Length: 189
Image (cartoon, rainbow, N blue to C red; front, side, top):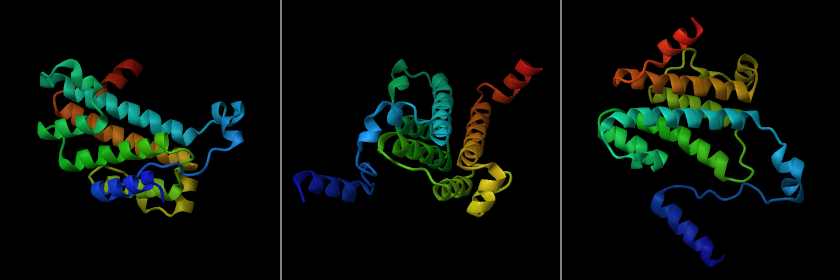
């Protein structure tokens, strides 16, 4: 056990968090052109785009609070904490949005991290328990049912993303912000 291991273990005990260490060793195939740059991961793409859209809605929620432009550079948790402190988000909203951020961070910062059907359904159950509306309680499906109904992991994550973004858009509208749903009807109508 090296010095770095002790520091990581101490950090984990102090924070209650698991450090983001690689899920596996980097192999030659990972650094070859096809291994890194051409490997399409549709599930990761859905997760990253959901996170980007969610953070954009958080920025819209922050904009009217008369703070300097520095908030644009705040990390995700600082944005949710500020919105909670100002009565825009509830604790459940903060917890739900921060779960999305944590899953995204794991996917983006842990080499070889895999999002599984099981972990996606667990996320859906967690989000539902925090008040994110899932019209059909997707987290209560078996893995086989969810794969069939949503056409795989990408579809499951897309449904989770839609529900989280709908929840955030509703908060934006209730806070006096833009009605995202009306904007779409205007564009298509």
